[in-house]
Length: 229
Image 1 (spheres, rainbow, N blue to C red):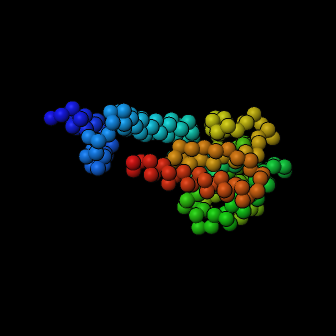
Image 2: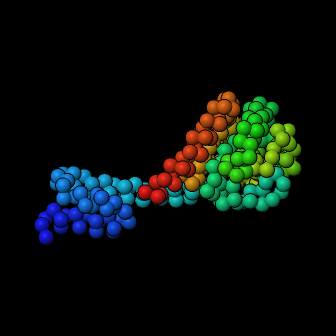
Image 3: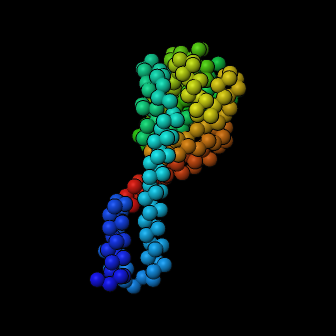
């Protein structure tokens, strides 16, 4: 067995150990590849596997960063924030309180418009979540009445809960929890399946926000393709 054939067989064995499929045509043409090209191919296989492992680790780490705290939705139903509202989904979050008279009503109106733009995808492909930054005041009943102003539909969940726990959640999500009035107009888009977060300005145009949501949704397709490779 000549040296080139031995190298091709070793490359196939390395690919098998890495859990990667190597096309037969590539293996058959290994004899014709220069030595530097064969080495580059091996390095590429290793790099691909390392990239996959890094993505898995990042996804696990990102999931752990979102506290799975207990919250209560606008209908009084107990929920786990990460497990019930975020895990495996594309979620658009805003941060509001029901007695706010400045930025919160426009944020609510924007979510109301998003519902129309999303249509049947609301509650299926994309989920809206409004998190209270004033849980001491914001009871489920108050949140339900606030959401009703913007015709909140199924797929848009408003949550409140224990102040200490919500403050911890808000800090992780990058929201100022010092006082309700200090919170920003930031909207957070999370594609949990692709392990991606994106912060956008919540008082911009609904069209711009939709574009950001579409981009985050597309990331799921890219992630799925990566997993198949």
